[in-house]
Length: 368
Image 1: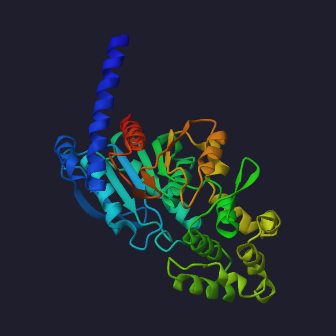
Image 2 (image 1 turned 120 degrees about the vertical axis):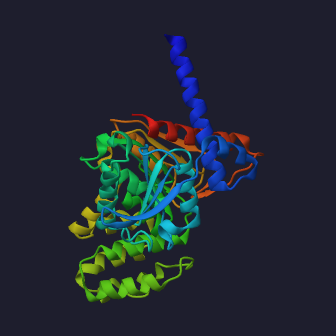
Image 3 (image 1 turned 60 degrees about the vertical axis):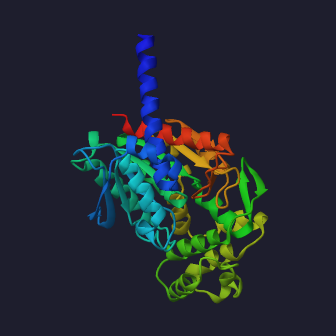
């Protein structure tokens, strides 16, 4: 019996490895691995559909009528599901035998992450699992950056949690308040300690757009959103919009948020965060997988660079401590630079860690 189990496990690993090489060769366009694509992949079929009320790319394997499913949630990018890297990943997964849905969630393309974004992520997951071509009525969730955060939030929904095969993500945040702290003060809260952590200024722009977008309708809200939407992604200091005027110059509903986003002192953050209106604080909790981690049932596989330029490893480690009903596994590899692959045969250990992560994700997604 033990021999039979070991043979089955070996076959499963070989199958997962072939599919992994096929996905990597497609995503990274590695010509040296094109032979693996011919072994593990089929030519995918791409269609555009409306799923859960949002435009969605649906990528099917070239053969069959029913497959294990992934919903892939990309990060913040103006091109959304049409970004070439997103399309390559979807095709790579489809070539490896998965039905892949890539929805354009509201606000994600422009970096305005709100309750509506989270709600649609959950609806997309349910719709994917309910499809007649979804094997077993189950769904795997895969995301990059904030897309990984949204995948975690979708997996916490009570009506889908038991139907999720795996939640896989690259460098998510798990505590929205900590993401705000990072963007405004350059510090993260790690096991109760403030730790300096350098992040890209684009994080500040996304945080600002999301937070202002969540305010009640007002003239100040509309003006601030207009200003923020006009800023290029590479603006050196997008939060200067909030430091140019005193909070008292804004309408009451926006004052506390403006003060928080204008602050650079990590020691003042908690005080300013506590002063936010209750509905804004509730919105922050809604965007934080950490607050609902006990509802996670599927295994969680997270991969990240040693020093990601958006979110530190402590975000995933904090999730692992409170997700008591499943396993959260963190893979640290320099083969990733946030959402970008950095594949090099000279860094074989890092490549092996990334390879192992992908194998585990694909195997978990194929389990009945």
